[in-house]
Length: 405
Ligand code: 7TS
Image (tube, rainbow, N blue to C red; front, side, top):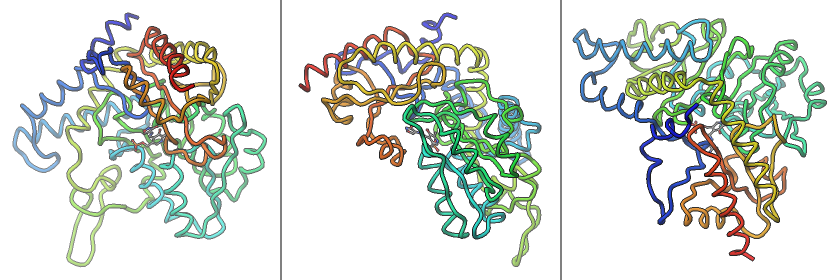
């Protein structure tokens, strides 16, 4: 693979920040966009822009065709059984809230258990807290061990027949842990629990097949996998989607409306009220084409090499504490704490050397409490990053040690 050539598909990476070449290590927050996606967006607005599913004119027909073609691409990309199992959302957060407010409200009763893990992003925690408050359901979590993996003994004790829903993260955005999703979904299924897998950090980083994983719901965000912001996907098994009530009411989701009452379209349209992010959906389709041309296995291997190399090199920095699991079980990120500097100060220092990272609690406050750190600094990678950039990061961390002590 010619990763340097692939990197040149990303115009934004070719710039200086504070007099240094930009080293972008914040893809877990949002990835950069290749020219192919940017060009698809401008082409759409220059030639085809119109509302979808409504008018009979050519532009609307073209926009609708491109929109529905993207739904097909997404279905294939994650191995869904049908295009109708793909619901477009604003992102992972909206997908989880949709499930909580439809399936959750319809199916949970006082005393039922919602199971999550101690490493969830707030997006996969707060909607369940709200649901528990509304329904009287009980929220429980699987603890995280010191090595950043889930406590497997606790899983067997906590996954009882009281559990109606098990919602967990595929790849942790704060530890990098890759959870054994297939095994966990199988265990949940054995006790009759429905599963929701948060794929915000796994989609676009590894091949995903929802049927092989065995999850009932899967969410992800386009902006973390080369697509525009504002577009995401909720996958749901048709058997479940069919039974779920709508969440948002409005245009596009109805069959027939009177002043008193309405009937609703089948999935996915039942859950897509109003004008969607048409350009975003088409951009997501272009991102999928782009990623598939590189190959998800290749991306996964490159991610793996980068994060293993980073852990090896960063371990040599005095006073560093790296969170998360060891080699082989880690996604494309390294979160750490340097004893001499607050994460925010370290992120500012790195920024003044051209390195973009994120510092803070990464929307996982319970996890920060669990590891007794105020926050961490996180270097997150994607296939456009290089070994040279990791070397640069290590140099800057060593310089930071001198600067702050
Ligand atoms: N789940 C996980 C695991 C995430 O990492 C994120 C975003 C979300 C859900 C929410 O995604 P959204 O697109 O709906 O906002 N994570 C991060 C992050 O780590 N830094 O910024 C956003």
